[in-house]
Image 1: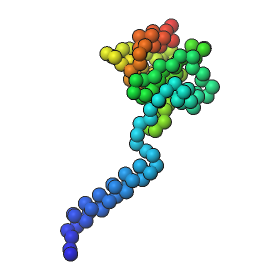
Image 2 (image 1 turned 180 degrees about the vertical axis):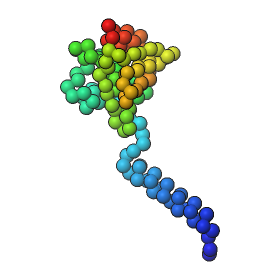
Image 3 (image 1 turned 90 degrees about the horizontal axis):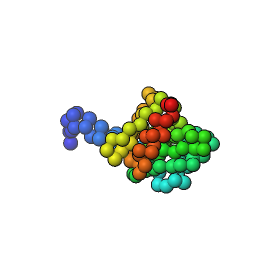
Image 4 (image 1 turned 90 degrees about the vertical axis):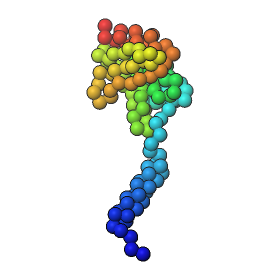
Length: 134
């Protein structure tokens, strides 16, 4: 049985792609992390900023992130980064606005970027984030 070179190349590429997909699955890569409850959000906050103890927490409806405030008035934004959560304490340059039911937070950091969360008390968070710049 003599296979054409193009077919051999196709089959070899297909095997390589399936092998890479299997390795990614074995390593646990791929699925976006989710915050199921406030306890998970507290753990993620402490991992992002050691010692950050939130007094107010708003979780995204789908668990894609959270906003938290501590006793000192600092606001921490958690958002997915790979299979973990990355967090930033928002600076006075951060901005927030409502886009329909969603809250869009621009961290003012190029590397961290913006986040879009659906939280119940979006207007309260817009006011709190805007107050950081005053």
